[in-house]
Amino acid sequence: MQITLKVFRYNPEVDKQFHYETYTIEGEETDRILDLLEHVKGYKDGSLSFRRSCAHGVCGSDAMRINGKNMLACKALVRDVGTTITVEPLLGLKVAKDLIVDMEPFFDNYKKMLPYFINDSPLPEGGRERLQTPEQRARFDDTTKCILCAACTTSCPSFWASDEYYGPAALVAAHRFVFDSRDEGAAERMEVISETNGLARCHTIYNCTNACPRDIQITKAIGELKLATLTGKIE
Ligand code: SF4
Ligand code: FES
Image (cartoon, rainbow, N blue to C red; front, side):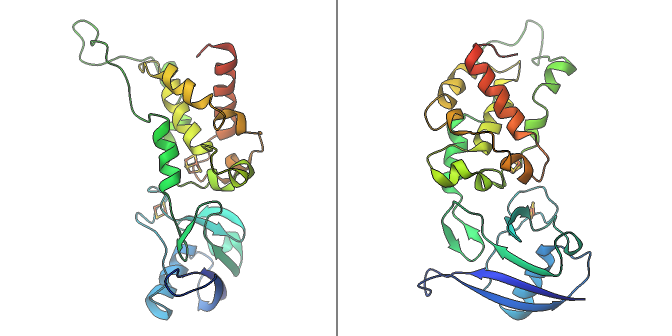
């Protein structure tokens, strides 16, 4: 089948402003959008720039807007999006080149959540690990699945309105550790997410949840953090 691929192009070294290039490609309905981009880069225009690594929905590096919706190019199939396809970079982050955005502000916000295990207490006597029941582990299971693709944060109108907002992905990282019974850094994280640019900027719009390629219940996780800050209870 014939596929029309319209791609956002911008090279800051030569372009005054962005434009779109349209490519016609012979493909299959089971082709991924990443395959189409690889085809353009390999056979039509080697200067096309986009990020990818695993090509299997694991690394989170190829999130982009496909027909207006944030998706991973390696997971989106032609049969899901149709044969006339527009591919654009994520919104709300500066375009570095073509489909590549500057992820530094995104990772800066992630780092603010102290996204690592904090516990300086000695290990339980005679033990070599900090034990946890299956129920305690299940409490934060969903938010462990994040691959830091930024599809959620860059689909959030509150983030578009203010890039000072830490964004849903950062809050997902906070949730993953705040509700971990073995971790002792919750108070510090709760302080960070209670700042003006934290939870208060979430208006429960659900765009983040709809955009997440890992099906993480992001709005629910943010709601649980909001409740914890209101009640002072982490449970
Ligand atoms: Fe991507 Fe989902 Fe993680 Fe957001 S929560 S960065 S959409 S994997
Ligand atoms: Fe790794 Fe798509 S290339 S998630």
